Length: 100
Image 1: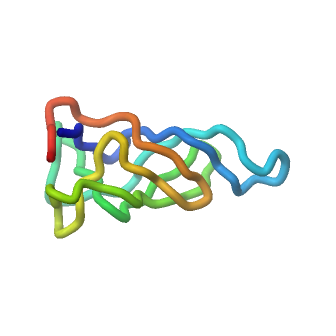
Image 2: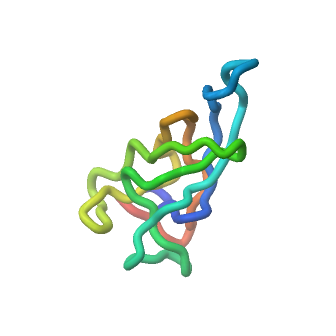
């Protein structure tokens, strides 16, 4: 069972779209989500929703629940991976909303 993530929830990892050093420790947040499904008043994040690093570079959610869907896409959850200029793991979510 996993905690569902929502718009504004956080990820941590690295961003590799910088000159020197090429990869830096980074964090950021989920910036897109379902417009119809909410968890504690925030939209539920799904596979392929957009993330942003605190540096401004974007990425997408690339892993999600295989058992629970929102708008035909798997729900993102704590532990889901993000990828793009940055790569990392979603680390926050709604502890009141469990999936899987």
